[in-house]
Image 1 (cartoon, rainbow, N blue to C red):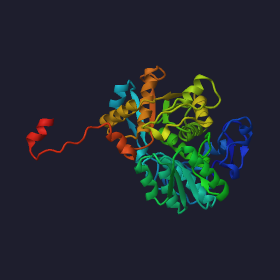
Image 2: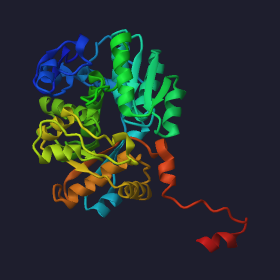
Image 3: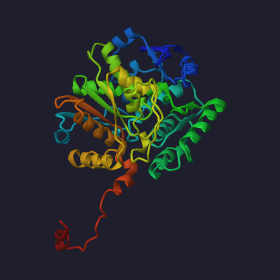
Image 4: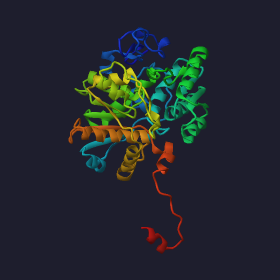
Length: 411
């Protein structure tokens, strides 16, 4: 093993050392306390601070010194990462935010930031010689896992929910995964638990109820977002808003900024903001709970993050960075924000990503963020993943006679 990775994991709650062979289970010591905590890769601080970017490596793996992989491993990359950080002047002016940026992750190979997780997780699957991988997903995670499994030539089984948009199912199937659907989320987790235990398949997503997090090696793929933000911005932003369900993205990005502190590249962490639907993180912060409670959640256009319960790891990311959680549950507000971003910045975000922009607006309204603060919203995926949701908000396209007068009549 080389790079900064120490070859083992540590519990995100109690700091216990955890072997790679038990990396996909919650920390046993914390489980005795009734808390599900995700183990995450451990790194040598001296190794972190002395690392160099390797521009000759593909995709996000130019940052492989800070990723949990063997240095000699042939990685699985499809050119993910290096996504644009867009200054949204017009949109920011409307929301009262002078320095509003969107990190456009929709330009990744499968159009979402999940490609970063999948690239590292499938590289680790190759390193550990996994016979197959399995993922439980409502779409983006499954599409990324399926694509990178195809690139790695490792069989992939994707477990989804019957109600997800057909586009999501097609994407997973197109990359060659075996895709099956269940009526509810807990049903797919039951099957995935059995598959991991009895068949030895490597999990690429979480599969517990209540959840504790995803493939821990893949989680650190999100560290590269922090590295790229610093490269493009030249400093740490004041706030980073992440659409959040089980918290892989928000904790992974925070870990990247923590590495940058160790390296002396920044002196202070940005405040991490969980943009959510259900309010489970808001409730945990309000009531000073150690773990997010289970709450009611209505059907949401932002279905990919509409979870009734959160995780310890996401709550830890919020608290350790002096961050916040902002819930936006109103479907009409989310879709109006999607339209606002598209028509003013030419960027078509998935509903869950648009929710992140709505959360940034709430930060300003509540006085948590000031006009001059720099806010980066992670645009996690494209609206092309669910065009039907957008279509329901738009008027039908008229069919006209082929003359200018007919066109002028409706202008």
